[in-house]
Length: 401
Ligand code: NAP
Ligand code: MG
Image (tube, rainbow, N blue to C red):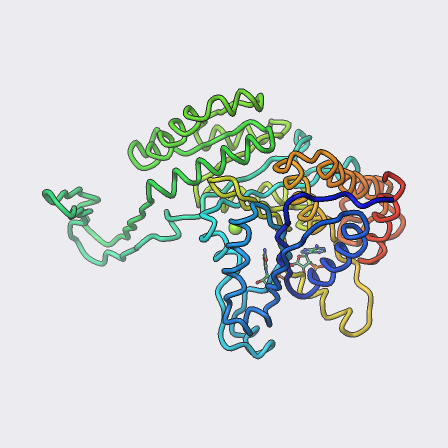
């Protein structure tokens, strides 16, 4: 059988520990036997980052800018313990954080659904994609303890023009205050990335804040979303999707009753809370994918989980593991499908879909890794090893080619 030709190179970012082992198996068993693809390979394994003084991370992000689509394995964000473990020069910053800032991107998380795992929320039938704004608010807040009576004010000193003051509170006794901010450019980029993702996934876009109470701060977010969605009305119409603004509490209640199949854009704090609600509502971290979308339409696909460190020490001792590779496989298929779509090569897109069908087919036939067993109905009698699962997917994929 001839291999399927991928027109434009795909950027590949390798990673660490258990996911690095899984990554190599996926590439060798599910990708390279079938695809003729020019992979622009960047090794983001922590040792290579250390060796290159982390230049490799920046280079990989620029390659995604250049080619448009990247697939990434999970990577270690080193802390003091990792610096010792891997004898690093220093605790290099998070690769994901760096790539996100170079691409000015927003991260969307999307669960993979299968028939025999029922979400904890009974009404959820389709994925809920969650987009979290990654700048400002609580996470860049300044805070102050007030220990005696006194006035607290916000003082704005513009580069030109008169100073403006606003009373926060006239304290009669002790208390506490906080100042938070956001940037118009950042909110706009976030809105654009959410629209790009909703259009790409062909799902309705929801956005929610509390503008009835926060008539300036939250209203600013609401207005920017309204303007950006209005400006791209034609794209919404072409994709057959809509835009809905709701108050955050209303949206939370609606989401619990809804069947899913929408993208929920959330401000930084709301996104922090609801991404964990949605992830645990759907089941397992091993079944959650993540895509970084830049406002100008560059995509990086990965698993939402980390390097599964605890499992990694088993193969080093020669023991097999049963680690879920599904989200890592879907990082590859997400990238392949997007590459096919951008290149207008339907055979490439169809191949990405075939791998996904093979994965879902295996799980629905009860061929799963250990983490999924307790979530399944009916419960399978046993479970596969990490490699055993990938081999089963490869066997199923071959029959569909
Ligand atoms: P983790 O890799 O997400 O794993 C935490 C636990 O969740 C695992 O020990 C395992 O539970 C379960 N789990 C996660 N993914 C699984 C899978 N595919 N299959 C089966 N079980 C899975 O988080 P971590 O251990 O806290 O972090 C390890 C490293 O990953 C850290 O160095 C961190 O910096 C990095 N990290 C990277 C990314 C990224 O690159 N996107 C994201 C998060 C963390 P059991 O042990 O109970 O089986
Ligand atoms: Mg959180």
